[in-house]
Image 1: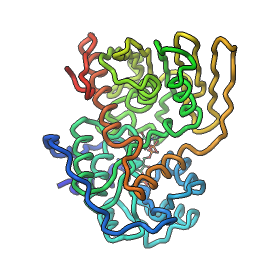
Image 2: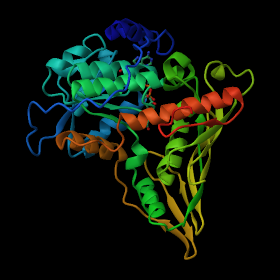
Image 3: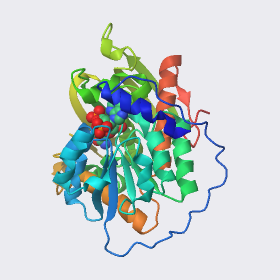
Length: 391
Ligand code: NDP
């Protein structure tokens, strides 16, 4: 039973976070034909903002997500789930969350009886995404889940299936796909401004800091699933996929760890990886936990190029275009990518349509990243089929 992992989560946090075994999910079921979506029992009144419950009050939730509800039009923060009651009680009044809407990991399933909550937003360490997604679906809620979607392909498949069985929607929080400069870059490439796209490069790096509690579980494989690739290399991979609009046919990865560095006993430091697409376009990508901050995406076509630098900051990203007309800095109106992605999901639920980045999108990235790890392990390129699985 999935709920039996609860004690572990609570105790792991009490010990300062990180460590401790994580329960495995049951093996995935055969895919089979799609299960038809259930009719909504209750239509949502027009103009109503959907109620969101945030699970996990860590660095990202507290500093980015909770404040972003203030800019949202269709989503309203109504509940918090945390292993730290004192923190939850401190945070709740700042956002108008009522005390009866505070849960911990043990009482989480009682959210099923709370009609104020429509959507559960999972912002936990990666290895806990699957468990809380499945439990939220069992409680009849829609799920918005942080990246990476989960640790294994099997977990992702279980999450997708649980959503279908519950007749509820699942979206992975790929904020860059809602960030105005990235959206504009995709538009410009699709409209042919830089000509046929042949090369994408993207690098995401930062220093992993053992003094930062948010980085402590990131060094533990059973909680993080992987190292810099899973955490930030996923932005490089996403960039290659959304700029080309294609799916990889081959990947090649190389891992380099700083020798004798205790941070990289369990997870990788640097991953240099190459992704080849059916059109012949190629992406040279990287992620790093031991270099100073970089969040850059570049696309090179036959007629020009574009640079996003920074590409995936929380704000103040920059898009520069170079074509035969010269160099142009593209100014975009700043708007919260967090509010945008949350509102997109609320609206998808209200309109009963597929969100832009559903579970299948998250699953595809996990499949590709697993192939990149395998390539690094075997020291040779790995071919992928149309679903992103090993050929
Ligand atoms: P933090 O460590 O800061 O927060 C994680 C929170 O999860 C903790 O504060 C704790 O909340 C809860 N938790 C429950 N069990 C555990 C456990 N065993 N160990 C540690 N924490 C536990 O991490 P982040 O906020 O940086 O990351 C959380 C998720 O968000 C990750 O999946 C990450 O990939 C994603 N993320 C996404 C970003 C984006 O830009 N889209 C940016 C940063 C992170 P509590 O005390 O309330 O119980």
